Image (cartoon, rainbow, N blue to C red; front, top):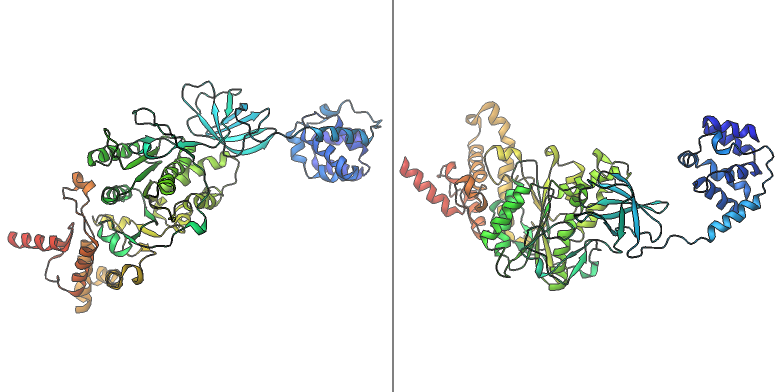
Length: 582
């Protein structure tokens, strides 16, 4: 038998397989494994196999686990130097050992207060070992011996009572052996009216320096989506006061809305204007989740809400809750802060029957954070390096945003588009969940037309004559047709010039350019930058204005009069001012 053991010395696993195949009685194998360290997975697997299936099966079982042997420290002659050629150990000895091992109780499910110790720190991922009371997946663990609170969320069970966790804050200063306590439940955050006017972080701690949030209501950030039978199917337009949105891609109450755009095309400004126009006029509550965006923007929004009366620092009339996990936060916080904001909104919908507005800026950072920790968790990357669970993560979050018979959540989500590529897996995965998509185009922004919404790429599920009405539908489709005709003529104009066009085409181009400029609109939140007073345009005024252009009633008015105006009455006033100057 020694000559077979000697073949192991160079760690040639092909030789091991030949050895296992040769010795079908498995006596030598059992003797070999009995001299390995007790903690070796190799030993446990061999013993269990002999007990359940007989000795001949052991060779087959062990042959498919060579990497586990190597990982367990089998490095050659050192591990079996005391093995003699007189291999007289009977298989029953190993069977008895296996039965004794099986008699040991398995690790109990989570027990509140179970203590473990840190065994590895890999960036935002921390491995914790427990002697007993293994915590459940998604349980929150609290790290002891720190000035600031650090919560770890259990993500994986690795074996040997080790769990792999994601840190909700920085892991600087953590050391191996540091004590960790299982809370026995998932991350729970304060919810209810007491959160209005306050800023929280991912674990529900106030970060606005206004003291603790005094509430009796706490809710776990992980929850199931509402049952199918509880959902509502009512459809109604949510008027935003923004012409291009209300006319061409109207939003539905209780729907999910996506604002797609690359860097610097105006996603955040548009979402700020929606907060200004919709949240202030909205009777219910609003929740804003800042996910991986600029801290400066979050600070600006907070002070603008105070000035606008949406947040009341002195009384109890605040209408909005803020949840921030900004760019400087570790990926664990950015991957969960979206769920924290959603949980606050769900409470208002389910417990108080409110129609809630949920603003998320930026949903791409939610995906990006998941991608950052995915490799550390040992997952194999998927397309373009994203996590293989991208669709599952996105679906689990998006399906919770819905309208039920108790109330509704209308979600407006800014979605960053990497390299302006809408086919990137992150924005492409989000598309499937949305009821309306507003696409911001860099080409339109280059023309200084703001909001830089692409009228031909933006879509809405409720753009249907049975929902929006026949007149609205016909005007919207007429506007899109004339813009598409203009787009097809641009190559001819660039090569041959306007003079080569027919009279009908010249008229089409003239009206299309007026429509293009009339789609621009001054925003109230951007007054300090543009110098133009912000305008809120009702849906009726929007339809009237574009219908007049399509009919040719404004063919005599110059293009410049349509730029950065609100309703059509503002265009007439601008035209009169221009006429006086001439």
